[in-house]
Amino acid sequence: MEFLDTPDKDGFYGSFGGAFVPECLKTEFKKITAAFLKYKDDAEFNADLNDLYAHYVGRPSPVYFAKNLSRKHGTDIYLKREDLNHTGAHKINHCLGEALLAKRMGKKKIIAETGAGQHGVALATAAALTGLECDIYMGAIDVDKEKPNVDRMQLLGAKVISVAGGTRTLKDAVDAAFEVYVKTYPDVLYAIGSVVGPHPFPMMVEYFQSIVGKEARVQFEELTGNLPECVVACVGGGSNALGIFNGFLHEPSVKLFGVEPLGKGTALGSHAASITYGKEGILHGFKNLVLQDEQGNVADAYSIASGLDYPGVGPKHCYLKTVGRVCYDTVSDDEALDAFYELSRTEGIIPALESAHAVAYAVRLAKEKKYRNILVNLSGRGDKDVEYVLGLKRNVSESK
Ligand SMILES: *Cc1c(COP(=O)(O)O)cnc(C)c1O
Image (cartoon, rainbow, N blue to C red; front, side, top):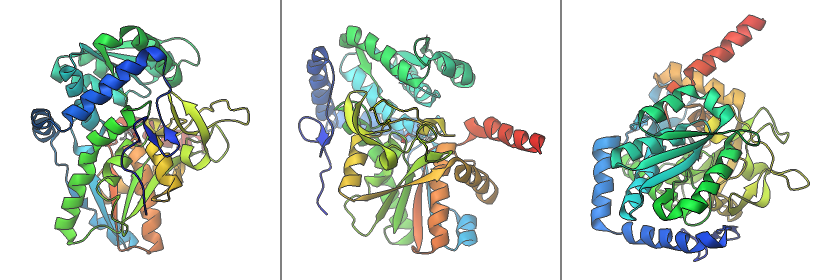
């Protein structure tokens, strides 16, 4: 199967991607691209990044054979433990990369939007470490809902800017952050939280996450003597999935599965499965598969896992679907919740609700017994979700 690893010079993966940005930013984006391409092959930059991965993040994260879960379902299931990273998820991998790049480019500040606050916390962490200023834009509703993450960002020295316009959620936070960025870009790097946004961000974030797949491949081969038969990861914007897929994209024997959130069902507004149900459109400066109504209005995205609820998806995923290299499928809120409990009880590992989607899909595959083994990217830990999940259970028992 023929496909491209990197975008063309305009940032397109097939018909997806590109950079639909105001004229004034075009030169700046060329500068960011040039800086990235220079430093990704720069020995000193890589030494700095690898030193942080090893001693600050705690890489390599282990691959763990989940024997209880495997025995229960009759198929060997392995977990790449990104939940064990400093800050509890894979996002720190690209936030450190973006922060080091900002420093090399002479920027004073990094800014970003955040929904539930996970990207904000990871970026605030990277900013604290590297001595950059950090402004995080967050919808006013999210600021109220996600107080612990707001507290963490502030504790880490970031400024959290509450956005009161529009629906007061993620979409408005993106607009507000972008508006400021257009005026301040000479001193600022916009640090995007996934493999989304205009070129070169999808390419950059994928590169910084590819460490996950590189490690996982070596570790899996050490454990089993072979490559995995399939690899499963959840897809919000798509960064943890592309991270682990990168170790296996050119191994045709390895089946790759991207798992999207089906939320409460297939009706528009009830899920965030952009690859499965989206149509081609431009969102936040890049062409991708966007959840939209008949008139082309961007739909609300929903998932129980706030890190997955985005109405678009990274352009490379759209491309990998088109060329048939990755199989995309969906898992509902209820299935993810079952997996959240199951992994906690069988293995003593509480997964993030996002990662629980990948675990649920692995269990589904395991029950089919088509494959001998499955490698799952456990993108984050679930401490952040415990209170919420237990609250759901209380509601159920109270209503009985
Ligand atoms: C943010 C997040 C995701 C979704 O983002 P991707 O870019 O699709 O990886 C998945 N898992 C966890 C734990 C997250 O925090």
